[in-house]
Image 1 (cartoon, rainbow, N blue to C red):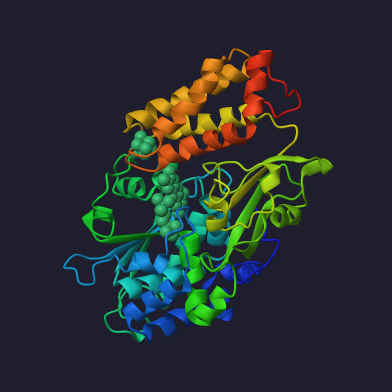
Image 2: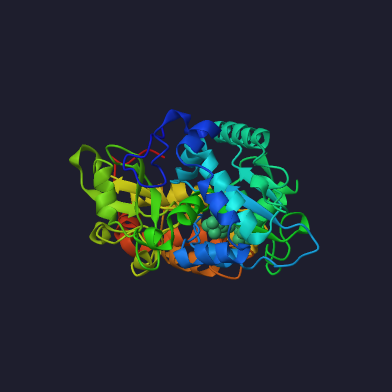
Length: 430
Ligand SMILES: Cc1cc2nc3c(=O)[nH]c(=O)nc-3n(C[C@H](O)[C@H](O)[C@H](O)COP(=O)(O)O)c2cc1C
Ligand code: SF4
């Protein structure tokens, strides 16, 4: 269950009020002030402001948003478009869902500001198909905006500023969160990532120049424009400014979302979630959604910013923190994770299609007490063979968690092989 963020920052400050998924509620809270301010600036200056703020994309890769906007061709005889990535399928990640349910207008205002900065005339919001309430809220919000004259032509009285927003429901595939898989799916094709180049800014949705940003990325934009770069940089680290909505799940007392500055120590976030369940010790923590390598308890003081996590061999990803207590069998964790990636590979690249299935088979064999030393050697070599050289980063995302588990919890795998059984009877069941 998703609750209102239990720590309130600027992003979530208005999510607590029930009416803020309505236009009237959003405007009462100061909504659409930022877009009016942006319209008094030159488009390039708006992009520069967002670039200077250092806002990094919140969809997982952490690319500087304002810089991405400048990749759009300044002049184009084809319509330019934006895509809001609301596919949110990364296990452990549930922040975009809350923003869409509680604060859809912050996303939509961020989109309008990005549209002004890039010259885009249309936005497609691609929402994960299972997200029924977010889709309903976004569609209602878009309808309200259109009725109010905030969509269509000559918006906010600005000649030449025309924009439309389409809310598109996906059909439930993890790979449709990868931006070019998303574009294919949006066009009604199989959600299989495209070879790059060309990148979306040159050839994106329906062949049009396109910028793709995550839901949360757009939601930060109105605050940056309204309150300024210095204010935004007052949160977080030098390289990763701002707050983010950290999701904390797994073996904690109070799972939920916590809006805190980037760089907040991992240990503090787990404490906000009530600590490890039943007073048990923590065995492992996935810091940023299931594709990010796991951390051992000795790393709990790391700051939750990508540049700090990179030093510990992992990444911030989507900020979805998953805590595992001392009873957890890491081979079972590997079985669950590899099963997910085996099922979700789109199958275009051999090393991804075959590697994900192979890893899952080996993990299940070890867990069943039939593993050998050769299997351990395969778990070292197969993920390494999958990394790099594929059409998209899914193969890396499938390889990294296994590499992390082997790096920090090899002893668990070795114990299974030695004892020819699972030595963790209290662990969750497969
Ligand atoms: C396998 C895979 C799945 C992804 N899933 C999502 C997703 O569900 N939501 C998202 O915003 N980005 C996802 N991404 C990242 C997108 O490709 C893209 O980088 C992002 O939407 C850009 O937005 P941002 O710059 O605002 O973060 C995924 C990437 C990969 C490789
Ligand atoms: S890496 Fe995997 S998911 Fe990505 S295109 Fe290749 S086969 Fe598909």
